[in-house]
Image (tube, rainbow, N blue to C red):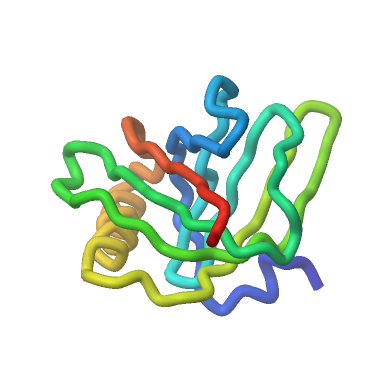
Length: 129
C-alpha cells in the first residue's frame, strides 16, 4: 500500500517557493498540502533529517487574502530520483489561528474550479528548537 493510499485526507496540489535553511538559493517547491501534512520537492539534497520536527512558514498568494501562518511538522519520508528530492511532512501540532484552515479551504475552492496550481506563495522551513 502506497503512502498516498494510506492518507485519510486528500492532499491539495499547489506550487509554492520553499526556503530550506542552507539552500535558499535553490528552487524548492511546496508540492501539496492537507490538514494532516504536506509534500516538498527540490532539485538538490537538503539537510532535512527524517523524524525531525520543523517549523514551516507559509505566505499565501496575494489573491487568497490570507495572512502568513506557520505550523510544526515532522519529516516522515524522503524519496530521491536522478533529478529531485521529495520530502513528506506530517503536521504534529494543529496550526494556531484560522489562517491555515482558510488556506486549505482556499486551495479546495481553487481545485473545485479546475485551477489546482497556485503561484506567488512562499514557504520557509526552520529547524525546531
